[in-house]
Length: 200
Image (cartoon, rainbow, N blue to C red):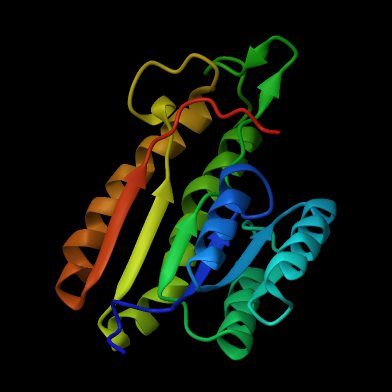
């Protein structure tokens, strides 16, 4: 079967709740194998159990990974390659958006630590995930990278602060570079910019 028809291995950051978990279910229903991860232990356990119950224990895995820890990212992708296969699909959905007592933190209220924390997760963590899958995608001549941005990165933020808006805008630049550098190898990159999502 040709590389562009699958089934493939997909990795989803922030894949244990909301958009990420819904994406995992959709990909599994389409026949792919899926690995999800997030920072919250409880959500990882719940998502792992739900995916295993719906699709069997051999087609998915769920792990706790902190995107601020490069070694943890590397170890996770190594486990995915060993247990499921080399990822051909990457969905970077993880992101944090700090809030104050009155809502989003503006530039004057944002501490440097909070700014750096958001960029470490939303931008640097995303870049590290891309770096983890790109060699395998390049070797196979096929890859699909989807970065989950936000309307806050494209227009006037209403419910997000400066760090979140800046980080989501940065994903567009990263995606353009990925297309420029890896498009010739059959790898595509797109940014999806949703608005507010109702979480059930």
